[in-house]
Length: 207
Image (cartoon, rainbow, N blue to C red; front, side, top):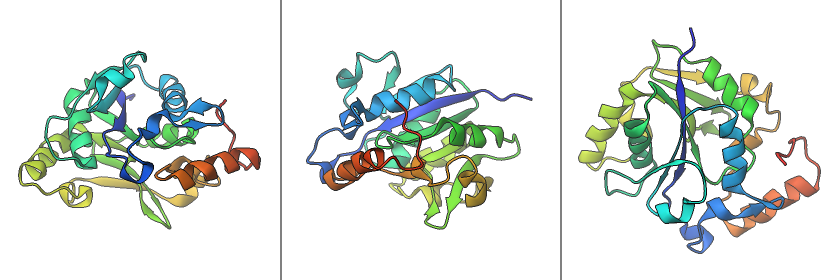
């Protein structure tokens, strides 16, 4: 049985380590990160939602643009907002600073959607990837409860939810270098992203 899934891009960070500039608009390989992400999402989702507190900056893109419901600046806030506005029972979430997200990896997560599970989350030797994961609408209330209590850690908000972890071996089957989880948090990361393309790494550049 096919279960419908919404795609959600989170662009609500303060970008403090990036000089206050919005990382979504950074150029990697001659294209902005947001354009790269939208290309991936467009091939997977009929509904794409962008969560941002600066909606006017994104008006040129054909997206459903929403702003946070809670005031706290946190990833949990963005997850809550995306789930609140999603019309489907599940939503895949990605941060706006992941230039190498692979469609094939997202497809692996989507294929693992199970109505008995609330979250589909990658797990690697580096830890869990809560901002490259799928959440059920059943996560909406615990997220709201924790935000109301000003408890912002994702792992605590969903500790009572049923989580299916996708192991590194499965993830590497479609993304050998796990570049989907590479984040551009600093100017140095942006330089590294350009190097990854220039070096012709195993990543198949989305161009």
